[in-house]
Length: 273
Ligand SMILES: COc1ccc(C(=O)Nc2ccccc2)cc1NC(=O)CCSc1ncnc(N)c1Br
Image 1 (tube, rainbow, N blue to C red):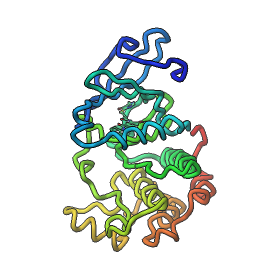
Image 2 (image 1 turned 30 degrees about the horizontal axis):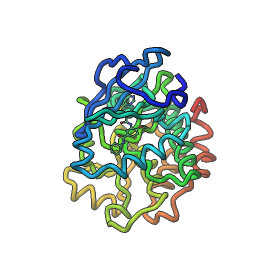
Image 3 (image 1 turned 45 degrees about the vertical axis):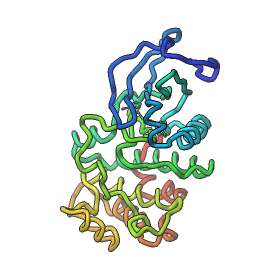
Image 4 (image 1 turned 90 degrees about the vertical axis):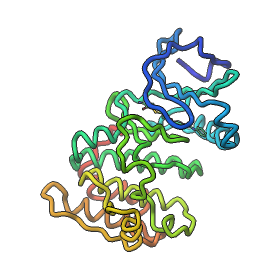
């Protein structure tokens, strides 16, 4: 299916399959384009919700940005259509679903898997930053896996709360950088912080500043209270990279370029991307 060819899409062009998840603003279904048999994910958003929450501009801007973003680690938005009561986004379908289901099943990833995912994320972020797009929200629930196990950032404009969503996800602070927790406004470097959180969580199975209460998590983030439990599975190179990312001063965090050249990444990531 070359989505750019067809001008106007409609529901009749698709056979709708099973629901993939549902958010406050709509549901996501697997679907197949009838002519080409191409499998996609359709995200159905109700117009009354868009009106109610004044989402027109955000949705329009997001669609404009997403349509130009073409990167192997960013979920494609092929196009969209609407009928009287719904707006439908035609999305790339990630056959292996949410990375977090994989992580909760496996408890933690190997250094090779973790490094490969971090490299994919770094390349996708570098691509976005060169396109001056920084609203990539690499919250963990936005990470999907395609049929080859390749990571895809799926920017859930509105989070899709699928059944298996981990409790801590909703409203979790674990991924917020200090400058966000202290409400100092943030820039590109916040994504570098999140890469550090994710790298830690891929290797240890839980984010570094997790705590009983949100207040404690706040405190631990602000103090960058970073502890590495003794583990034979995590090399000192990995800890070195995490320490270079989880730096309070956002201007001193290791850059995306330097991440790609870090010994731990060079040694462990395989570049299937
Ligand atoms: C480029 O991906 C998007 C781009 C935009 C928006 C969006 O809703 N924007 C938005 C919605 C309302 C208001 C303002 C913005 C959402 C996504 N993506 C998603 O919703 C992911 C759907 S879940 C899924 N998708 C594929 N394969 C799977 N296995 C799964 Br599970």
